[in-house]
Amino acid sequence: MREFVIDGKHIGKNFPCYLIAEAGANHEGDIKKAFQLIDAAKESGVDAIKFQNYTAEKLTTKNAPKYWNDGIKNESQFDVFSKLDTLSADEWKQIFEYAQKKNITCFSTPFDLESVELLDSFDIPAYKIASADITHLELIKKIASKNKPIFISTGMASMEEIHEAVSTIEDQGNEEIIIMHCITSYPTKSEDANLDMIKSLDLEFPDYNIGYSDHTLGTDIASYSVFYGSKCIEKHFTYDKNLSVSRDHRLSLNSDDFKELIKKIKLIEMSRGSGVRDNFSAESSAVEFARRSIVSKYDIPKGTEITENMIDVKRPGTGILPKYFFKIIGSKTLKDIPEDSTIQWNDIDFNP
Image 1 (cartoon, rainbow, N blue to C red):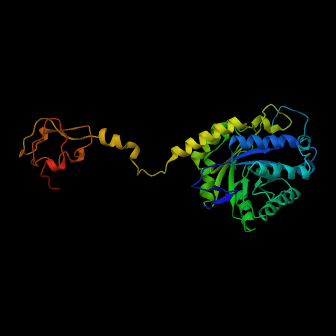
Image 2: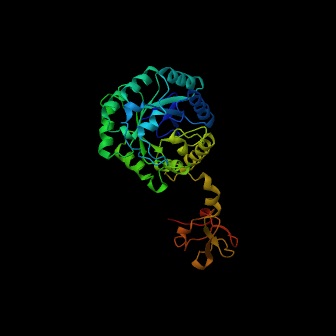
Image 3: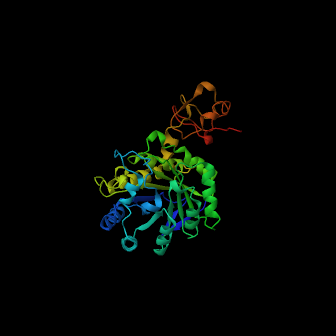
């Protein structure tokens, strides 16, 4: 499995789960709100904040229906996205410069070729490919050609489509890929999260890190993904859940929520261990005092031949193991053994 670095932070098997605050378009077309999102993300302790770059007219026809239910009828995708694509190229430049000033990694999801070039002019450290664009191979090719790490979401995609997208990236000589399990449903119900897919992707793409782009509510499902092998988690992010122009505020975590998620992930990573049972240090007292040994039922004088009725099996585990119970019968004692005492190997003349 490949490991690589984004702004000094490692992503890979032997490193903590990489956490992305997906700000998307929660800036609502206002640069001041974008700055507030960056401040809040920095304060929450995430590894990176991510935005989305698109223009409504390049993204959707004017009549394309919404594929999510936000309770607002008679509104097309174009109506929604045209409210959110108003930031100028100069404002985007200021946003990325502000993130750099605040010392937090900042990158974006471009939804068209022009946005890729715009982001490239800012020398962003990574790119994200949205689930909806996993079949847009020309866009994927353009992003891959920038030779930056790529997070690619796999919502709605068949395994064949995922392979085709990954191969398109590889064909550009780019192998810094994080494949993100994702369910394109807003919000995703817990029963639809299908976290086992993380394991399936890991088996299918053993050379690449697998992550999880989560659309469930709260922090539980995202944190559970670490148990399934997720090396990166992306969650929608806002500094104010009461904002409403962007449809994503209702799905988003705020700074306190992300702090809770980080705490859960650290606990999970700490508790996972290695999968190998070769360290008994935490159980050393139990090994010594909860296990059993062969013990004397009563005083056994020196030179006595041990019979079955003389011995029993009791705690602590500081003497001869119980599995030798019948094997030591017939041995002679080399010293006096007091009643109710653990029997040691140097107490008898046992010859295996």
